Length: 175
Image (cartoon, rainbow, N blue to C red; front, side, top):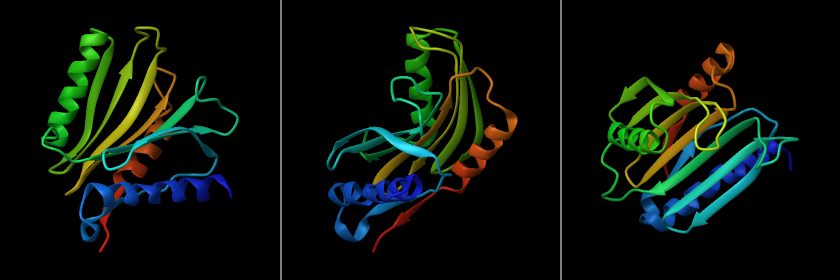
């Protein structure tokens, strides 16, 4: 099975997690595609609560990656207020851990999603990093997409490509 097929198959696993978090007729999954050359580096799941999948480029190791793409699916609970408030919580946690090390930029914000990026200087044993990410709120699930590179400023063409990919991602409800 090639990397793209494995990736798409794993994305559809999200609907299984969603099915346990919501009634069967209200399942949701993420409609998102990426390029080839990715492999699953790590995953964690608690059925009915969350699924996290970290993808690395072929030839990289999860403990020593150059590029990292992460797809997360969390069962929506009362703790999730809005995409903007969720981002504010992420910012506050990062600032507490690494004061003044991270620059944030909201690229696009809608009622049920927020597309943003952050750039961090080395902090707390982590290297410099630039990440493009999107939070999408569904009726029953909250999805997070992340693309990170270990440089302070990713190339403009790569940034534009990931913004486009994440902008096109959508939550699809199963019936």
